[in-house]
Image 1: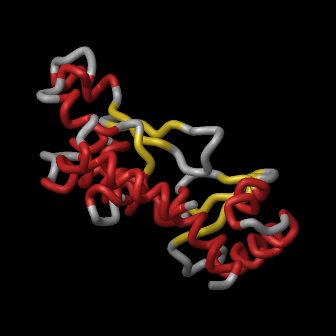
Image 2: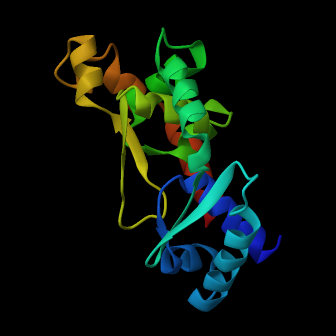
Image 3: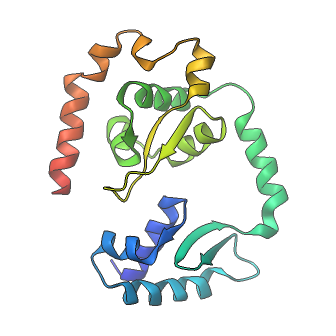
Amino acid sequence: MTLLSQVESILFVASKPLTVKKIAKAIGVSDSEVAEVLKGLSIKYNQPDSGVVILQNNDEWQMVSNPENRAMSEKFLKAEVSGELTRPQLETLTVISYCGPITKPELEQIRGVNCGLILRNLLLRDLVKESEDPSNLLPTYEVTMEYLRHLGIVSVKELPDFEILHNHDYVIKILEQKTTENQ
């Protein structure tokens, strides 16, 4: 896998501004190598017919949708956040409720599927929130006060069988297995 491919993937999955230093640390290369790749990615994506662009603000970089597509993107997102939650959204929300705070890879390890679009939708609906973890490259996800208010509870600990499911052997085993694989 090339350095360009690695940086491109990180920008894509992060969906937030990242510093050169943070990207370099994640990959294990120098800041200057990452900065050079980011310049190349800007040239690749910042074209009039590209659906995504690479933004740079000082030392932060982010992959975003092309501002020219704003009206269409907003129309799509509005349709996405209205209506009832889908079964995959409910499943994802349940895992976050019982296991949060949880990272996206941990969530995907438990569910067995990519959860990027589902997380985006739950974030837009203000049912989950993304929190930065200074000790980790990846943010964690947990339910919001709006979620608790909507359910009429004051804490996730009021969810049915919370203690049993929060500390379930299967979940602990899956998360430990993921941690062991990453070492």
